[in-house]
Image (cartoon, rainbow, N blue to C red; front, side, top):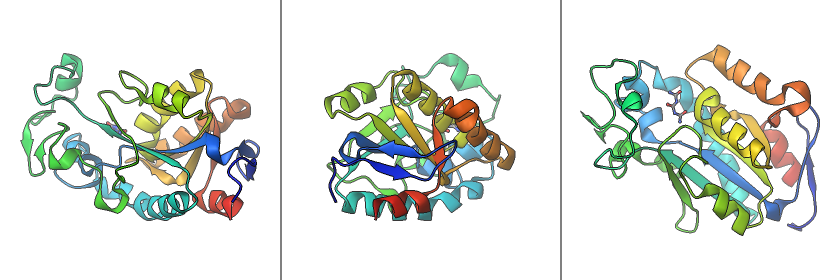
Length: 225
Ligand code: TIU
């Protein structure tokens, strides 16, 4: 594959064009805390099984992306052990009996270094793939993601992960304002709420692609083949 030759993907609102060597796959927060029982997602009152359909399409995409020699970046939402980067408002939001930093079956909830904070085994990062630890919903806030992308001359992002309307949407909006073209793959992003999945994707591609493009892993893989 010629990594400097532009590729076109069937997408909405119109085809997404990217140069493979200038494109990174950004996998958002595919952590046990969101996808397995006993973590942050369940603590917020969600049925985490809703997100698990995203695992296999992400796994296939990641395998193909790595096989083509393209760039991969992973993110994780979470906080320092001493919780000094946890806004008090985020700690108390939801009025849950258990909150961020409290002990759970996978360790302290949403705390770096704990089992629940780590990425699920199916999508585990390679040593060569940067992992961005972020304290917020957006992957650009209080992280070095923009610097890493700039150093690597990245201009286009393929964004996958969870959840569609929260960390995926926030990151796509942050990326869009920084000048990146974002392609979101509907089968590789997931929400605890079907209507937010639909609305979250509709908002991205509306108004001529106000925040970016929407396609599927099947269409992206077909374009790369
Ligand atoms: N609650 C919810 O839908 N999501 C988050 O809190 N974080 C991410 O989306 N990663």
